[in-house]
Length: 145
Image (cartoon, rainbow, N blue to C red; front, side):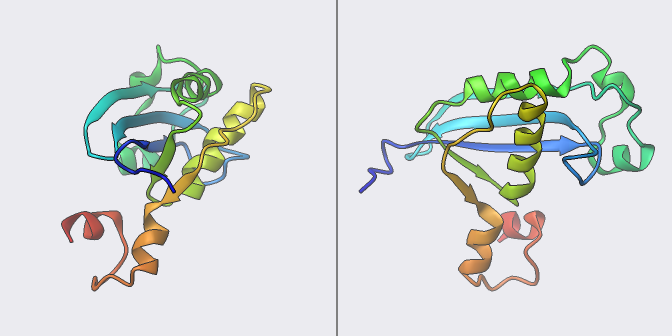
């Protein structure tokens, strides 16, 4: 059994140029490492330059534009930095985790590196499994709940 008070977690998120990891790229990745007691250990954050123009409609969603990523590392290197920041036993947590994990893994494969093998908790799935009394399972709704 895992002693959750001693377990280290990483809550993370990505922003991307689109919805398909095969045709789109990570343009931001961020994470917070913390203990099971809630003590923050470290933060990671980087933008990534996809090497292509970011669609203005996509910028409306996350607020990231071409000028903001101009001097950032490419997505492969950004994801490699994140993957090296993760420790082997850390448990990753994300809202709609398969989306983020698939994008990070796709970028790492482009750089000839394997994706993370850490355990992953999908916050969206947990919320649905708990059948919370909410109108919908949007992240904003769940945070407010």
